[in-house]
Image: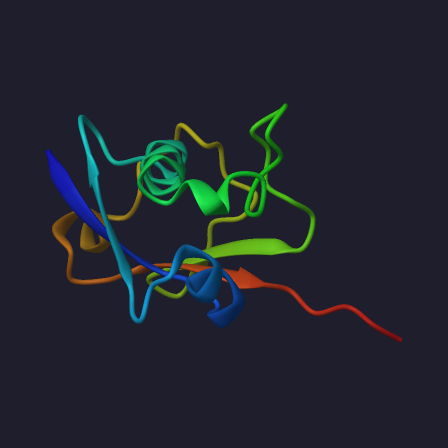
Length: 100
C-alpha cells in the first residue's frame, strides 16, 4: 500500500472539508486513476468534480501536475512519477482558467 499526497485547489478543499493536502492510500501501483478513485472514495463530495462520473475522464478544465510535468493527457493507467509514489512530491490538481 502506498500513501499519495494530493494538493487540491481551494474550492475542492472546501468541498472535501480539507484544510491542507489530502492523503490517500493506494493498493498496488500508484497510477493517476488509482489515486483519483481513492480520493473520491475517501471524499465522496468530490465525485463528479474532477472527472466525469459516467466516463471517468478528466473534466475539461481540470489539470494534473507532478514533478514539473503536466500529466493531464496521460493514460489513467500510467504509473505516477516515483517521487509522488514515495510521498516526497504531491500530485497537484489544478482548475484551469479560461477567458477572453
